[in-house]
Length: 293
Image (tube, rainbow, N blue to C red; front, side, top):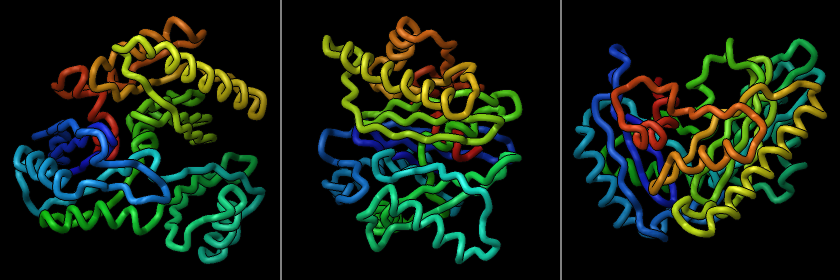
């Protein structure tokens, strides 16, 4: 089983791994203020209400002893991609090096910060994907699951697991855009490896509201700036952009609006998913599917 928490909804799926099939799923809307995603501050504001909602979802999945994981809200973590000419062979020295680089980006890094790293070699240099989250915030969610009798085996990040849905051998020079309530994450994949991760705190107005034009404009500007940065720095052209919009009201509207404003080939990441789910379910559940499959 896997679960995702955002400020607007919680979702969950139960996967049969051998059959590579989704047995059950749920998507439950949250009222404003139940979860306030943050890297440094308390996330779960109304614990009893969130527990009640999660219990309702668990009834749909069917509780058992299977492994469970969850996805942190985007704004509850920070991710970086660092470049190095070489890396120390000792793991402890590597961790100290990565922590030093994180501190240059975040001088006030909390004492309980957990750092997870994934190095890879490009043929010219080492790059390291580093994710940072506070242990106290992860524990908020773990304690919630423990109260309901579930043990958490892994914790993921929505935008990062979306890249696991793609065929990395074919999709080599691309951008993945994840638009969640309050946040925008942009990931560039070059030569099958993540070369850049950017996260922006952004007001994402409902695509049904009259104010949505400002949101669209902000997203277009961030995409264009990021593409230009990558092309200038890496000397590579982004071939196409995969987009996921977690809009509970109209999940197709953002893609349509962006297609009219950007000079790139845009692809809906939900189109990759072959399970028998509705279009909104594919969009909202796609990070969980990427995490599990």
